[in-house]
Amino acid sequence: MPDPTDPLVRTPRPSVQPRLARRPRARLAGALLLAGAAGVAGVALAVRTGVASDHQDTPEVELSPRKDMNDVFVFPGSAPGRIVLAMTVASPTTPAQAKTRGFGTRTLYQFKVDNTGDAREDVVLQVTFDGTGPDQTVTVRGPAAPIYKGPVSKLVRTGPMMQGPTNTVLGSAAGMQLFAGVRDDPFFIDLEQFFRILPDRRPSTGPLSQIPETPSATAFRGPNPPFAGGTPVDFLRGINGLAIVIELPASMLTRPGNGRIGVWATTSEPSAT
Image 1 (cartoon, rainbow, N blue to C red):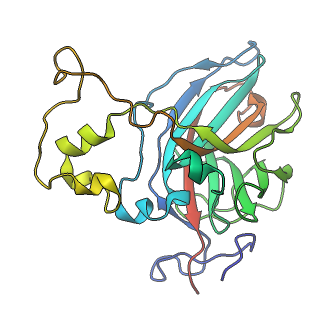
Image 2: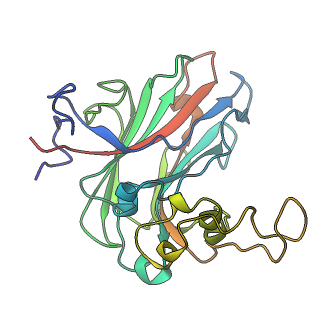
């Protein structure tokens, strides 16, 4: 089994760049743009694409929840000049599952940051895990320049590194801080009704897989048009996911004189030889 800390991991498609690193397995979760003025305290958000969420959108990721990218968030940090990057995976995780669920030990979780405006990553933060269940060890590499740009990745060997237990706040309030572990899923959706509207998107396992194959609803439940009537249902209430949250000085991601960045996240895993 390939080691996720191996600096050279092969792509899952041998016909395409056969000896490079990792290819994303879950699709791009989202991109957010940040605008911040150099020399001005704080970070101003200018969101251009931040309206989507992504849960179990294919059978592959449904059956591989630790690779299933759900949401990506970027927002100002706890003090002026600081920024928070967050991603969630593995939702829905029930409270019972949360007691034993951990991140993928063969999965590379990455934040990618464009600070030149060309929609290509200039800085990456790479997150890997060892161990099983809720008592894993998390390692963050970066922020650092990526070795490769685009769909293939290789673990960086330069720049900051942080390591410690999951479900614990690591680092310092003045530098980089990290939390990786179980958190409530913040997304609101009437998932059952969604699958009744678009039944071709229903899961392949579980109770929701029993929804009819043909559409049986045309709108979400709610009291006023355009809703279908009835009471709104938050299907994900009480449901968890696994979150990776990093707070750090915005200057570690931006270029001097330019506080504007684009942020997205990926999950990937090593391929077979």
